[in-house]
Image (cartoon, rainbow, N blue to C red; front, side, top):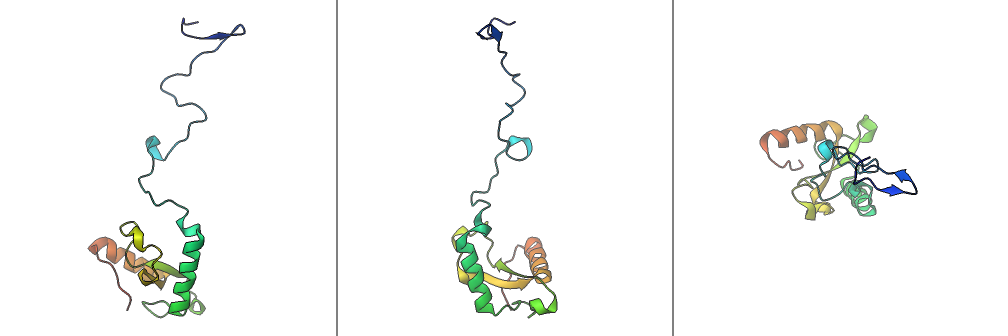
Length: 123
């Protein structure tokens, strides 16, 4: 028993080791760091996003704006941001910043944007 260990009702309560976090500690990713993104993960579940997404589908007529494919062609249609939400959070719900694209076109556009740093426009 160390001199700093408290004795309560005749029971010695030892302090937890300094190199281990308490059992109820909240971990944030690798090495305990907090995520750096500030816009949150609940964005795509929000009512505002669902309304903007529905408006984009209605405006674009459920057609891929790059290749013209529809869900009847067996492709998954998604709503994508023209200007990335991570760089332009103020445009996240702006209907003019959204376009309907199929999964293959979205992957191709993402790779082009990643390698060239360009923002892909519809058409």
